[in-house]
Length: 343
Image (cartoon, rainbow, N blue to C red; front, top):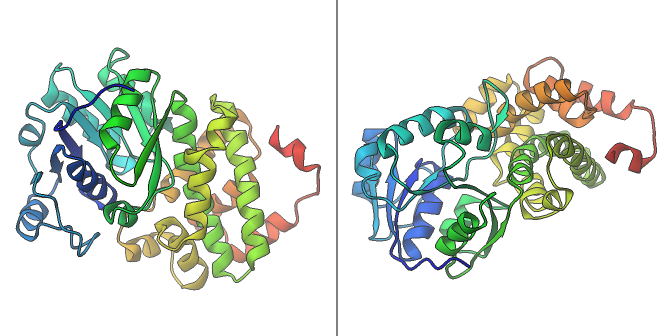
């Protein structure tokens, strides 16, 4: 594995729950970490309180973690940049980072899960378009909740890059205590798994919110996995990637635990009155599955893919039908051989 001797100087771009948790972990691993937030008021609060009280209350910042709302300050002389912003601002954020780095050689990765909304592109396609093919880059993903990472609980993730040394760089940078980072080269598979599982978490939340039972939840996870495989295959993902941490692992986690905001969104959508937009606002954080399902819908139409669970989630989040109507649609589908649906 590539040797990475701390302290590295690492900029983490995005001070939501996930970005903050990763910044805390990297600082505990011995690195000098700068955490960027777009909000100057939030930056001041974080510096004073030395914790992210909104998302990770009671978890103190290590001394080596500094906070800034200025790109030139947080990116000055960095060895590596990790982008952890919502997918809908990923492209804009990369453009700002690129303009400040201005040709300097740095290690670059992101832990954002989703698609670029305007083009329905995978994020590595957006990053390559911004930085060029010569820039080594990696995507970091896996079955993780920010709260547990910040608390130092056992965690396993994947660092994927077409450049093996870049994947290993990030794995080594994160290696500390209970945190294990595996490496591989299937960026498409890792990104598909990280995005598609959020759609299925909404579906299982809806099912549990309607009190359809454990049988239904298990069936949704299994059939959701089949859909993820079918969708990933169309985009060039490796099946073994989707059976690993970034696919099956993340799918099971987000579909079965209420720490998942996508699952909570589905639960509330089934149980509480209101539109999808109103329920997202009540959650107070970005529900990536809502954005992902709209991108997947466009891609599925392009490739003529049969993705029935995704289709019903799309109808629900666009207020085209009720959760009860979507269930009736799914249960009315003709029976077929299970293995045929994996093709």
